[in-house]
Image (cartoon, rainbow, N blue to C red; front, top):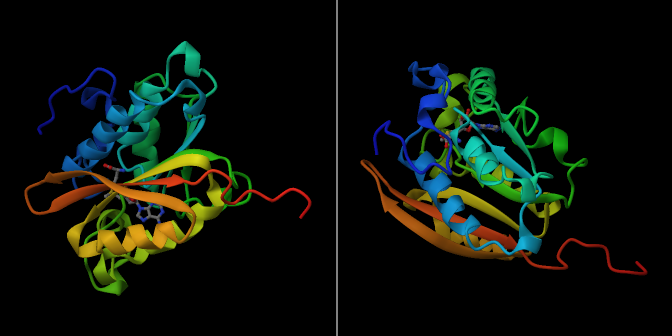
Length: 237
Ligand SMILES: C[S@@+](CC[C@H](N)C(=O)[O-])C[C@H]1O[C@@H](n2cnc3c(N)ncnc32)[C@H](O)[C@@H]1O
């Protein structure tokens, strides 16, 4: 898929910040980016009115393409109460996301925070996140590369490409609302079956809902849906 215009319900590539296209600073929208946005859009078409996400987050927003697509999907009047938070550990990616947000007229709907995963929100958003989008650094690399910073953070995933993935997944049980959904990209080397098994043990229903063959890898989209009642305090306890 090239830099052509795509579905009008998604973010526009023409409005993505130029920083994302100046190499070596920010992850440029690629097959994994488009797959994640496409799958969330397809799913959004069957969301029941009572299950429309109100609080959405993207972890590792890079160019901002995915979070702006999610915000664009939810932009109509009926969903006026929806709010998105995008985080990235790379400050230049945060600048790019902010620019992409402004270019789409979504300032006020999407907040951008330069931080590690959702660290500042673990308490404030506990049990309150309805949708998580996560295209992680999933490439298998030496563990030392994971914390190198800069553009390396876009791909360096350490052992089995799972270092950042596992760290983030461990926080989701406490963050995601009942029936909330997580959509994440994984490749074969990440052992997606093992990731899904792990999430089932944390109160989620886990499914592989899409697979796309890209140039160098086979990309999967995993969906985790928080079971109703999971993580909620029982009455009288
Ligand atoms: C594969 S890129 C995806 C970028 C964008 N979401 C997309 O789909 O095009 C992964 C992104 O995660 C960011 N990232 C890596 N580790 C992170 C962490 N611990 N917390 C927040 N963001 C992180 C990287 O800087 C990079 O922008």
